[in-house]
Image 1 (cartoon, rainbow, N blue to C red):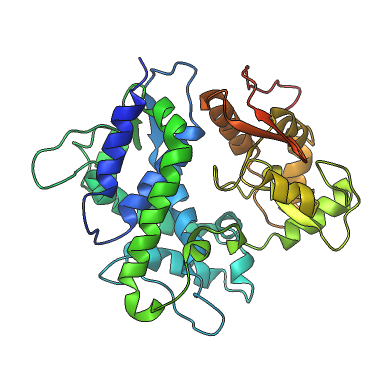
Image 2 (image 1 turned 120 degrees about the vertical axis):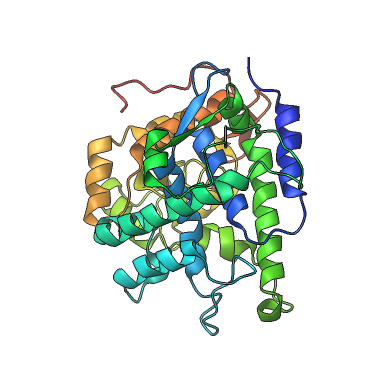
Length: 360
């Protein structure tokens, strides 16, 4: 049977309300788990689901990667993510950035660094995975100082940095039966709450630097944290400089839109990117698109999209778009507002949101 959403939601809220955190790492792991849950929804809502620790580590790395950039051009201040200052995660990611040194760091997704400097990336991933297993994954479900109940996964073997132990457990954690499906259902509500807590923690840890600084949420989680200029150029050259949604000819007002909203699943891969006019982009905003839009985006073809992405050293993430789409559409209620076109928003139409082999 599926896990009760109310019960699991209350347990997640307890994690948020446990008091002053010493670091943001538990929050990062939870946000990464929510994203992975959306992309791993099983056919059986009550099934247990294994989460690969390498995949989880990469999601955590991707969350912190853009946060390593300076707060602004005038002040080369990198915001702390723990009361103790530097951490294993930041130290390792800084080494990857140094190996892929360029004047356009802000414009580089971490997947591009993975392609360009694979040895440095792999070394960082290995060190960060051990750190996650030893600390935040072990402590994530622990609320208070007394005994506690595991409600996401069995953490009895965690708390070690032993490669032998990690390998002995298949390099994975297993979400309890029903948890993955329920996390995917809760993600649209819970993920923003964890991000808000993350913002509050970073502001508290950097109070002497920020002062009366305006909201830093955009710096930490905004869609502008990575420039999409290069994807825009290759999309226009290959598919034409027209709005993906209304076919209007694009000129100065060209936008790059995430077909699956970035706020729901942080997929910057070329498969999830299209050109859009300002009107369609603003109207669609963070709404879930009609499934037909996802179908059209995938119909551009895996081979074509992968090839175009390779020419600009950009991720394609075709499989992630497919799995995230299935997870998003299959777990949201029929009352979910769905964007079809400018001035046309309707409730989600239920159905089987799988894509055929021909479309893939």
